[in-house]
Image (cartoon, rainbow, N blue to C red; front, side):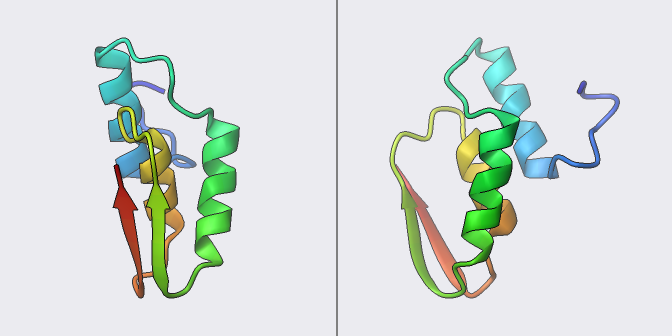
Length: 77
């Protein structure tokens, strides 16, 4: 995936976070497979709050947000 050819399977916010991690040479982001799992798990949470600790460049957070219902909240530290 490059900035000029977006991957349709990767949500735009995730692609932005991946690009930020690449520019900052941050290698601790979750893999695409783990990210997709996070999105599926978050999609099962209809209300309340999901929290994440250790956001790095926000790749995992972006995957969670991509799956989260609009009636739920997300907090990251």
